[in-house]
Image (cartoon, rainbow, N blue to C red):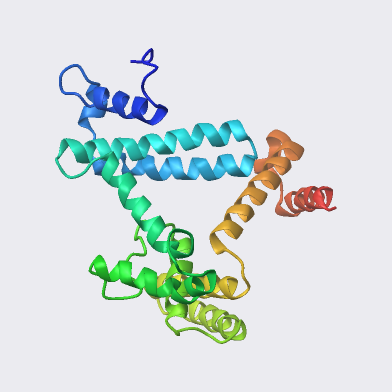
Length: 257
């Protein structure tokens, strides 16, 4: 198969997946998979694309995009095996959506028209899918911070939003107090969730993507902590907190511009 020059790159990949999923001589592992079992891999590959982009390496981005494309092909082949749909249906569906969402490119609308009609276009798509709420279609499996921001954005476009950042900033103080006065663990957990939701809302009003901001903060903490480990050596676990804090501040100062 690898020596078949008549195949386009995507057709070659589709043919490989068909062979892997062929009950007659296919791969036992690939044949055993279904939508549910490979879903975690799909999510993982999407994150690895994001990591590759953050690394700035074109080779890594290309490699990880290939892994993500494989997931699309895998899901499409599983669907084809069940008689549900195939890869062409997936490609046609997204092509139709792109043309529908860009009438200023593929139709007679102007850029101004599209800006005015964007929410109407998406609302029509949601209605066609049976959605009854503007919140329908925000994926449950999204990372919590990202889903919170998308829910808030949808609500805001429907007119349900603070007029400025003062509202969500005050809400943070309110939610923090409710965390501190919660009567039990269950209530405290609920209030912490409300606090995080309020922080995301504040970030949204500031034009900050909360998911990206926390991802960057995680990376910064990991980088600094590993530098503290290197400075402290094998005795780190036995060092007093003030000594570790001194190492932390030294690492932090070394990163200052």
